[in-house]
Image (cartoon, rainbow, N blue to C red):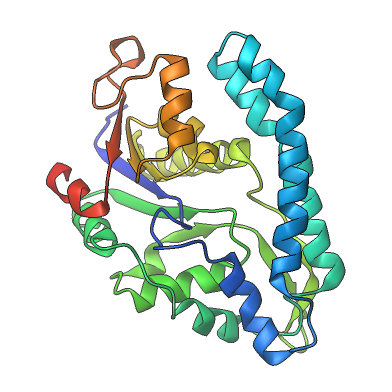
Length: 273
């Protein structure tokens, strides 16, 4: 099968954006319903669960041989932590009662990192290039608002896969429950593989995968990609790459030349496109 198509997959928070935006998603409903529980409480509860879970794993991380299978097992183990967080969000309904337009408008105040939108444009100018955002964020409409506000051209052609509120068919307002779709690293891998398969079936082309991410949750996808772009210099990702024996900016001959680049900014990525 010909290999002349590209699938560009982008993480959202702190890969494209200048900061984490989950608090901004929650703020859309908080402005409308000031009585909602403060987002800081949810962050505190999440971090309590995270630290407890991390402590349970630390001995294994320190003493067991580091393999990609071990990395995947470790990241998958956080599903309970992430699911508990989503369940709290649903239980207290902090995203309930807002419209898709309100979430979209909330995303329009998000700032992207310098050079991010330009880099997306450069990729999209190449023939047979497909772009999608795969994120643990809580609203596709919020993400689309951010894409449009930051000048990403043809943003409607960009697929967005993330967690989403459920919406009432009659009122058009969000309900309390968040529908989980992308919770942990393996969900990103499954989504990417599905997109690759869809492209191959529709076009007869086997797409080259480019993945951009910033955190440890992104590392399996960064390693799966033909070209992985680590945006920023995450200490945890750099540490795990060292433990796995993965060098930056060097093709891995045993994996068909797959390469992981460590980029201090999107502006530096422009030189590679």
